[in-house]
Length: 498
Image 1 (cartoon, rainbow, N blue to C red):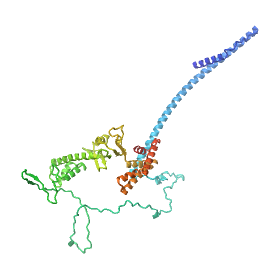
Image 2 (image 1 turned 180 degrees about the vertical axis):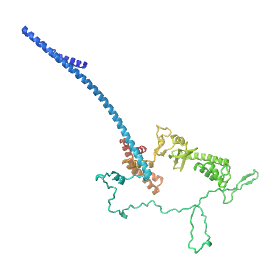
Image 3 (image 1 turned 90 degrees about the vertical axis):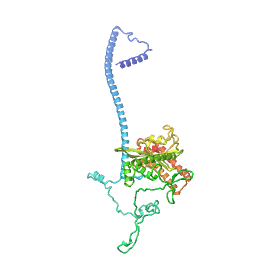
Image 4 (image 1 turned 120 degrees about the horizontal axis):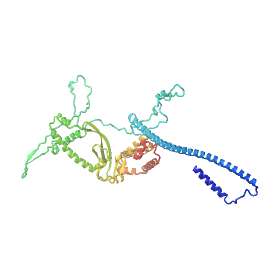
């Protein structure tokens, strides 16, 4: 009501402003007394009527304002509900999008698992069939007795199953070798001839049948030591080899075993995980008499020299401006009464033909690699897409390796795009795979042509190769700028890796 009173007051002020400049008019001038009384009576009745009308309008306006107040409350409530519904709809939209992405990702993983278990494991793009494969069981389940559900797609309507021999695709025999190496062993073969006098009949033909036997045995070698004295010197012991015999005593320092013997027992223990007790029993069964402490000391001495060899190989593999490859894989490690999944790393320097395996408590963390690299000033490291390598070449994550280039493996990249095309259903991924495949085909041609490193470098810098690189880069930039909301998980990983 207060708002209505303010509105009326405002209107009265506006009306008074419009009539303010008018001169007052005497409406009773020239009237008789009875006329004035009748005029006053008339004005009084008019005033009474206007007052009643005004009071009625006030009541109507009060009801109207009450209704307006209720309507405003209802509108405010509706607006609040509308905002709440919009928020809920937005949240449900986000959840639906997230669920759709998760469903797509799970479907891709399921398709990949089926491919790994039942399909062809060759890393190549699978051609998509134009029509869906016929399913006899699905046709049987969908049929409900009506003609509309009757399908015969799985029935072959071809009039004949004959296939012409000329239409068959010829086999590619380019990789078939000209000849095959026969099975054999280096050295003279031991022949076991037959006693022809025991043949109970006429001799038709003779031939040797080749078999191969594997024998592991221990050999005791004795070197004759001579105790002699030169004029004016103290007597001493020495070995003077005869013709056709070893030039030196082939025993490892501090032991009575040859280096080959230590290599064999180290391989049994550290590679084949043979326990020490079984190793000692194995040597005993082969006729060797040796105490457990002596055998244990031999293993310790061999490990000492092996550690020094690893340091030398590490200095060779990590020399300045080297290009190395690095990878890690899991292995089962025995921990007392159970096995634990651990990880072993490998670093390869192809130029030096050196490969080093290293292990640190079975960890797959980044510290294993950084501790092994130390202060090495490498030119580049090639690896897969594991996130432990992302610190390489990134000054924001590692100042020590900011000058080292992190190279991606083209084989890993190609396989990722093949997976994105086959399981993710991304059509553009096939073009990425074709470009990367072209690089491999060019490298194969270089190998077949026997190009020198300089010639190979010149071919890699050719115009045709640069055109492929430009197309690959432009295609990558184009795909990264597109909306990735419904992008395949495998495709996203492939783009980020490349």
